Image (cartoon, rainbow, N blue to C red; front, side):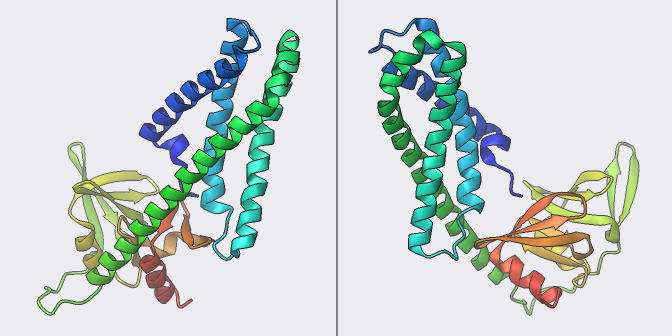
Length: 273
């Protein structure tokens, strides 16, 4: 599966934590002060809310990435989104109520009075997250279209392009030694700034060069450029998974890689699908 940015992207994770903490505190004190809640109860409420907001934001990323197929019509998508909204609201409100009942029983009556207002606030927060996910999805689709155009241009043969020798092995420097890697041992190559990361079952190494150079030099019947950032050893592919318009490669190493639209077409041709 694709890495969830809320969990695995350091910058997005830090921003999400800060936003969840600030929102949780504002949320708790906004409802706690009118009911004369103690500072301890309000802080506990804010901490619990922040944790739940973070969990739900991570879950919603998965929901909008994998759980709403593009094949559904507009009415089915709308009903599915309402269902997810209700589940998210009940998840947060239910756990908050349970926590108050178990740990702060004296605060339960005051908490219950604010529950309708809390549900409305949670609905507004859900709408904000929903709009963000939608905007992020549109940005990904625009980037995907750019990748298709770029990769389509790269795939056109150039009359002036030199003939490249097919690689049988790649050498990488490991300390004071030189490691020779037969191309059959490669799992995939990944663009890494100004370098290319060579990935095998034994590890990965950085190597000078460009993805275009390796695309031209690696055996065309054994390797496919499935994304602007990835060249994959076809023999190391376990399966191809599809989520709506998105495709993922499951590799023998257990890793998953995103496939672009153009890369998926290339792979289908090479696999005779």
